[in-house]
Image (tube, rainbow, N blue to C red; front, side, top):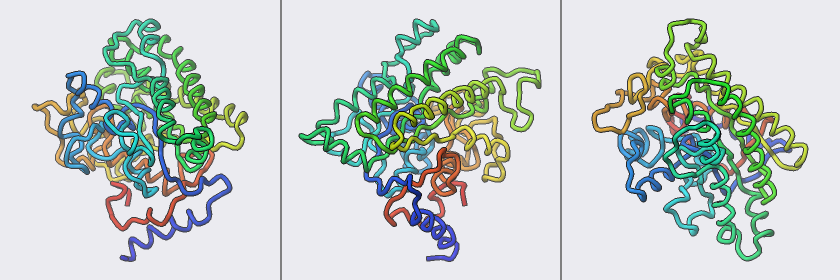
Length: 385
């Protein structure tokens, strides 16, 4: 093994061999809930069955790693993919179009466009037009519950608790679309959107407690990204006043305050839930700062493309996947892929900061597995080494 690779692998192996008391032990399966940040094909399947088209079901989506579209809203792998690879597990299959026979290593319920709150509630609350099928967090939870007999065998309570004691649950990122829908439906940033935040976070807390009652003991709950840095919003809410922008990043401060408000309430919700379930590992994953540090110093992480531009869309009109749209020559140099979603290189950087550097997880938590995690591929975490 090359010396450079040994220098990368040894610290990781030492970290895993000295797991803290909160360590999960070997993880054998993953169960994921969320939206397009974690969707590995559900949204594309649902649209295909409905006879509709989604741009992320076509190239250039997927071109970097898979060489074909997979339904991921990215040019390659997502954070959920890096987590699975890190644990030596297969990439997580989407629930829709899959078979329960293939779900014993885990399954992904995350669906692009999914909201935390029911879409009917959002329609009535904010007077927004929602044309997608409701695949909100509550629907995903119900699908998970319906799957339990096939996952856990005849003795559901005993079987599930045994399975889930060795499982990793990832609850989110979710909630971003509850804010994106009104923001993209012609509504400006207003108090109605701000007032959604406690409702969104409260429902995430409800679902968290539901999966704990079903036997989950190792749960990652990511916060929202800094949406004020997304090219789509930088274009949509372009303003000449410098007061609207963070001077260190060029991001929209008001939208980032919305993300931070969501994340602050989410951490408080997780803290109160920990008091109810002291034996459960409830880990907040700080996606916001894991990405924001890239915007503060992109060159340090290997990004040379303008951070306000998307690789596949110039200024982020989210038409990537249309025949007339061509991506940039090298997506690894860009932070953003299509205006609303990040590149594989960005997701790889976030994953490395969480999994190998041990950053942005509160409280700290060691995801331990077998030595299968050792890699000697330089592109395991893009733009990281």
